[in-house]
Length: 195
Image (cartoon, rainbow, N blue to C red; front, side, top):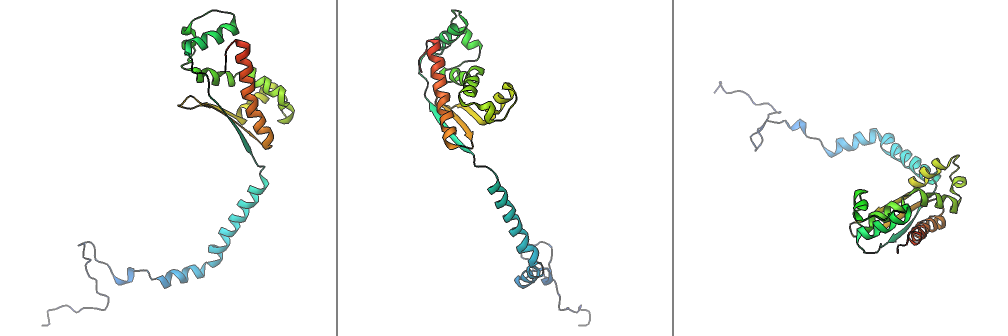
């Protein structure tokens, strides 16, 4: 039968999935991959090594930062009585819980977090640890900003307040975290509240 077309050595066959036919030349062998890697061995091995050395150098040059952590469980009292007592003692006013609610104080933890983030406690911390000199800041405002960046005060869902202070000296970081608790106790004692 002369009408039949001749088959060549690079015949294409349809895949089982019924998709586009493929040629055997489209396959990549493991040998070809190894030859390509060998051809670019300098790039493959030297580049990651250089990156690792640079990363190690940068990490060794950076100062160690330690975090001091203190956790506080505020008293489980009525929010309005705490807010009224604290605000009344600080302002000299005798107000009810509505003022505390108007200020957004939903529970004792919010009140304690607000007090820990107050300017009064920040100034006491700056004086106590001579932070203006330590942070090498010219003004008290700049020192407060730096202290705020180095400190984190947050209240969890369970009501526990966490105070974290970052510092290059681990003892100072722990002392500052504990000092926040002491300053809060002093503010509560001055306001007639308990912590």
